[in-house]
Length: 94
Image 1 (tube, one colour):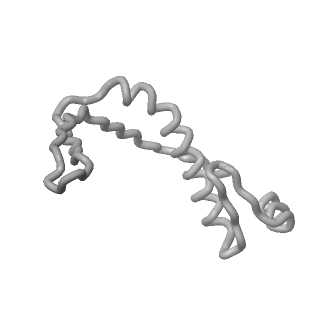
Image 2: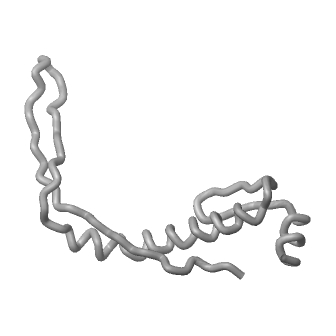
Image 3: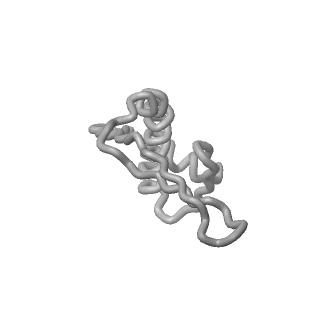
């Protein structure tokens, strides 16, 4: 069985400065721009690590499955997938 081996993790979340300007159009909405800085946002890195890791593992498992399907139908929604029963039986024999 194939697994996600050699998974490299690179998380970069930079702190952003938010700049707002008033609109040049009368009664228009103000314009807000997020400008990244060189400082890491360690809080965001800590809180997003596990969900991002799980998402990456789910995606790599589906990628490995797609290579084995040989143009068979596969339906995915987030981390759920659906294939025909006969395809499951064929994959189980491999």
